[in-house]
Image (cartoon, rainbow, N blue to C red; front, side, top):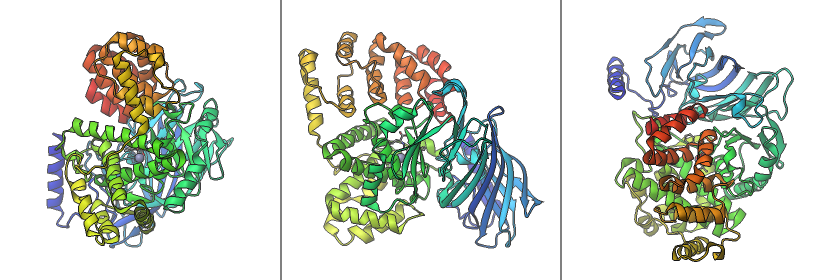
Length: 607
Ligand code: BES
Ligand code: ZN
């Protein structure tokens, strides 16, 4: 129904408007080709009692066509007034779309230089998660974090919420006295007694990279340009886990050019954070579920760091081009990990990635359009169309190009790609033209081998997808065979296995193991009490269908604390299939602890 209304509305608007719709991004109402925002001065107060952010967003604008309207995106914001040169100015709020929110249309003239919007966030601001003290590690202070990607920035500040619109910013943020506020900007490292924090972001960023975190936080340096923020009881564990960050940054710079953002810090969030990581510039947000105690899950840091080039520097033009952000980042992440840990380590990551890809393609269906790299998300919430395809099919395409033209040539090309498109957007079509002109056209035989267009515009996994071999995983498969033949578990060599090997092991055990088998495995290897969230997640995938009750308590504990969607989605799916009533009972208890993006996904499974 909503879809029909949207279509009718769009038809109606285009009929009224004799002018052509020049918007390139159908997930934003803004019209940056007419009037574009170039700089933001944000001045807001964070009210934990009312769970509201309120204040003023002042934008400097550039009127490119002498147009009489500035159009911003808002979703659920209450607009108190708009001023231009301190005078109240007229504005309108357009039709409310259930996915996109509303256009905020402000009358301007050719000479208008800046516009101020006075606003409050609404009760259901999807970007915001307000946590009560119980949901934090310290249990004493509340916590707030934002998640703007893909189209949620508009739920906490009015903005031209399209990846193609970049603006620099300053911000004044007032928070309760005992808390520290930090942003995707130059940050303080200590609390200020009056709770009034000032931020500056000189490099222009798209709205989806706007971020704010507020909590009882402390900072620890990790290296010259790197550091970590976390709650006091988490900081030591975090700084141990992330001690290789500075080295990662130096490796990345050596490969693809200078780091463009000065500092690289991380903020460790409470466990309800819906993602593994979010590449907010200068301040990556990460889940505490990667604090495994043995640095085994830090490829996620390499991933978010790599976004400083692929994504934050060279940005996908629309969400249909999401693979340009994520596929490049996975490729870059694995190159960093290869330099840091060796080829065999990186091969394990690639093989696990291949498994994710195959799983995703069969879940969607081999001929499903969402298995194309170039997506068509029109009329949909981009979040619903984001899958492992962008990540892993994207990775394997880049790996294929690397293997075909040779690493040296490909690295040279990538470095030039990042330099040429720095602080710009690129779409899939422009990328195809660019790589053809700069790498492939001069080598027609190699170009033919790659079949770039098939990878991008067709479904499934092309048959020239690179094969990855892993000696380490071969050994794991040997161990599984021994177990299935009935060899005593204590004789099977698992010493020195990393969590990747354990993951491969768990993923490749037969799906129909009975409770006795699982008990033997658990006794020998202690899966239920694993401190590694990836291992635990793969383990629960086996225990749920078999009804192995000994893991139930820990499973419930996991579901009640962790909000990371990547884990919760398959777990609730499995639980619902096995025992819908139980799934509903646990979900009912846990739901309040989850972020809206997780809730949106899980409601569709459990409710
Ligand atoms: N940018 C993404 C997270 C994201 C994607 C948020 C789409 C909202 C919409 C981030 O870089 C990411 O990919 N995170 C992954 C971890 C990564 C190691 C694959 C995650 O959160 O699981
Ligand atoms: Zn990513």
